[in-house]
Length: 109
Image 1 (cartoon, rainbow, N blue to C red):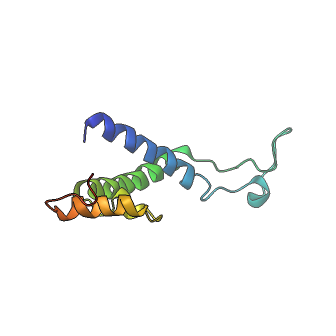
Image 2 (cartoon, rainbow, N blue to C red):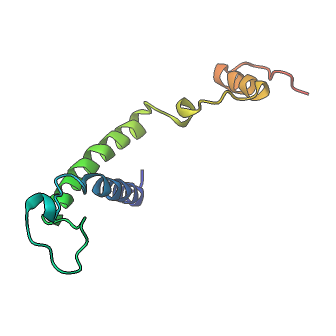
């Protein structure tokens, strides 16, 4: 895998992780009992901590990317494993022929 691919895929994992961990631990002003500023939304957080979100997102994305890369190297789950729709009979026969390495092609005309 190229380094540019690694950076791009890790970046996608990081952004996804940041959005996943962002709502955890956030409290509104009503929950903390603090005064609200005029014009402030009722749902605005009173204890927003971006460093904590960055740290959590970095840890989660590193774990997810490590699993992704291990699967890439070892081939545990492939695209064919995720195919839940049965292929047409002709394609299934062709795939079986390619998999088994038969000397003659079935129904070759």
